[in-house]
Image (cartoon, rainbow, N blue to C red):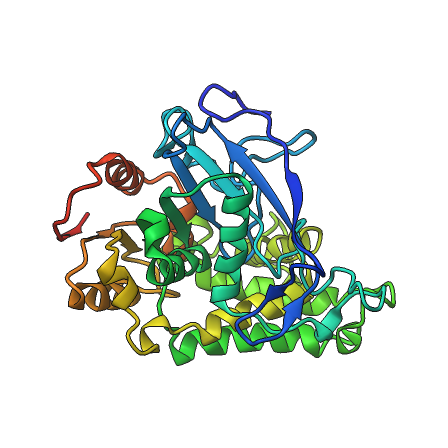
Length: 385
């Protein structure tokens, strides 16, 4: 384990049932879930007036373990660069909440959970989800914790979409929204990437129409391929070239169709390790939510947030081609039509979409400065760093 000096230290993942048959979760589609369990972690201390809470929304393959170390883990939480004592989200100052979202596979109810009506895993009988459903469950957790107002909701990628949805629909509940490397509407190319990943999973011979858990098998080949392809889109050509170039995987090898190049070995490793921590059905459901997300297409999308303004920080990375800077600019333009307070930064980084997880000082300093700024600031700021 690494030095815990700038870490929140050892953490515990908690579990709570937020909805039951007497108080079911009614989804945006009108369907209902009679049992919803959520996994979550907290860091720092809630102050006396409960005004220092910051909610973390995770990306596609994230979970509740955003910071610190769990006993037995070899790696820290997925946003260790961002969250901790003295860091951008300073746990000496903020009470941080991080949860595994609805539809996930790390302790929260999802398509591989047991359907209480049948006693078997839900599989593809699990209802389709909407970004609004994620927010509904997050809000229930906040209420469970006895918090009435959030200082901020923060997220990257899919997490940033959740932060945007929350701010647009329930703006009175948060003061600030931090939307990082996200999109308000996927392009055809983005939908295509996810479609190929889903097809790789569903065409795996072990997918079995989504019943693989009941049959004690798993679509490992398809899920690994989906992860490998997605991972290519998470970095940039510059990043791949810098890290791997055309280096061989081994000192001696003969040409063939095996793993000959270092970048191939890297992708194979990413695919294999993914199998141990992520569920194929969650991959299908969560990517589909992203495909349909288009909040500004809703009539009067800005009405609520204009009435109860939220301060926004929108951050992009110049080498991110999965959710390019133009995706962030689109969000800013929509918010600006409502004369909302928006700070926008396009950060220089060679590492593509995954930059939001990395230690990039100009990025982390921007987030920290925004969260710690006076909450009554109502200006608009644009900058490329």
